Amino acid sequence: MHLQAKFIQFGTLPSQLDTSSLLTVYSPHALQLQFKILCALEPVLSAVEGCPSCLNTMPAIEVTHLQKTFQTKRKAAGMSGSVKSLFKPEYRSIEAVRGLTFQMDAGELLGFIGPNGAGKSTTIKILTGILHPTGGEAKVLGFVPWKDRQKLAYHIGTVFGQRPQLWYHLPAIDTFTLFGKIFEMDDRDTKMRIGQLAEAFEIQDLLETPVRKLSLGQRMRCEVAASLLHRPKLILLDEPSIGLDVVAKQRIRDAIREMAQLENVGVLLTSHDAGDLEALCRRVIIINHGQIVYEDKVSNLKRKFLTSKLVEVRYGEEVPRTFKVDGTELLKTGKHGVKLRFDTRTTPVEKVLSHLTDAGSVVDITISDPPLEEVIAKIYQTQASR
Image 1: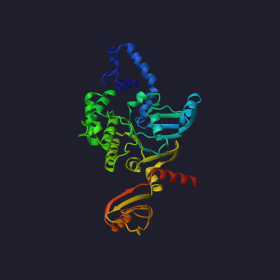
Image 2: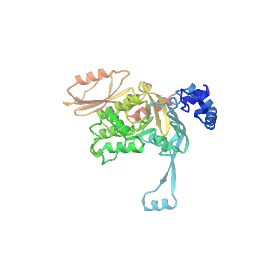
Image 3: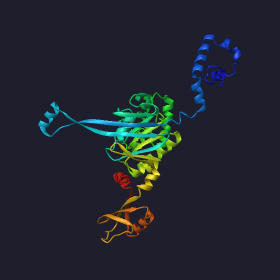
Image 4: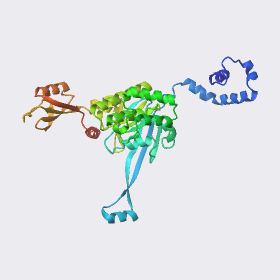
């Protein structure tokens, strides 16, 4: 591009000014300085012009050989053990994260799951800058979290399901307003943003109610909305649906999916609920003992490993001892209920439900996925057999 056009493009010259009138408006010294700056930036500007979307294609998260080891003190029982640990302490090392390497694209919805103690929350805390890793590298939106934590905070949102960020005794609207001040948002912009999030998460009637009086589902909707107040490019959700009922979970899932689509927000989700993955994520990473044991599309995970269903049925009358449904495994029989398991690849859900309803007057019925621990075990068995 011609240098005069570059002057105009970057606002140093008005577009209607021609070269012959430069010296009548700008001093020779100022023009010379701007000319030198633009000449120095010529290669960079040309590269940006040739790739206008390069910033949008930068990965949201890049993790390479990430490690985190905790040192814990060991103490024997009793007073003697306390005295010994005081003068001759013994420590043991716990590897919470072992050489994690993965990448998450901008705007992606990624599931990050595993059993308790797998290293999920530790990884999240490293990616948000709360913890320093023992080894390895990580970048979040181009920032090194533990070095640029303050800068990164303006571009990410976080929700820890068991650690609320809303002030317990104040209405949620007060915390929202405070967050607007913390993130240096204009008062008018904060008010408009609160209205937008209130509509998306259906919390218009909850904002002026003290948080302590909200149900768990209502509070979690406010928590997720608060994390999106400053329009982050990435939101990290650590078990946001823990303890919620089916309706509350679905509301949060719908709201998160809608906001992610509207604003191209990347979502890194950790959860013990396979339903969260099915509803929100396209790709999933499963970790155990700090290591990645499976990484693939959610559709492939469902097809390979989430093939069985658990069914619990409660009847209005007693269940006969000879109760049986073809194509299912009877796990438990009670006076008024049964628990079954079946493989969806060989036995359709509709067939099982038809048999169960024909067997008596159904009071309640629940269909669920197997525990995540069983899925992990099946993955290990599959890998061991290769």
